[in-house]
Image (tube, rainbow, N blue to C red; front, side, top):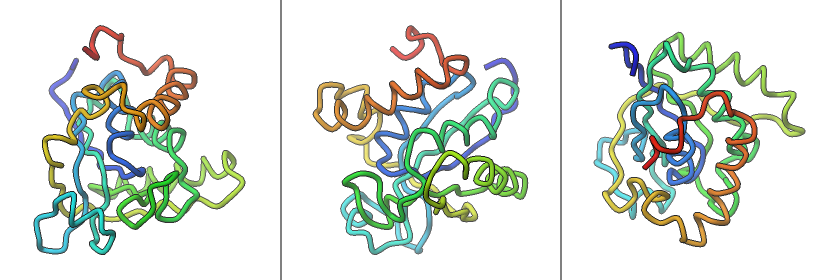
Length: 184
């Protein structure tokens, strides 16, 4: 990182395995942690959240250097690498835990997300249903979910669902990618 300034973005775009794998590849991203965003006063776990009856979403918390990558650039990648037009659904993953959401940390992030949604409406034939939710809490996912794609590249889910998203990232965001050596 080139500066001492680190900002945080919290996004939900379906399965956190996918979202984590995407954002770890971006220049200026210091870390990406899979977990659960939301709060109902109880500590979440995968079994409880996967039932779909909690306010939690599978999400990622991204720490990034805004001098290298802006929040707006992060949102551009976010909207390009998942389907923000399907309510509580990404592919075969269905339920409120798979919703598209920006958990904004401050007014600037909220306004940037509102503007980004307006800017990306032209990219989709259906309305964007991404929710803007004030950030409350983030809980790390269980260890076996962390770095899932990196540890399980031959898993059929990774090959069929995550690989195409990464290829789209490579095609559309070349200037924002870390060198492959940094991903090891």
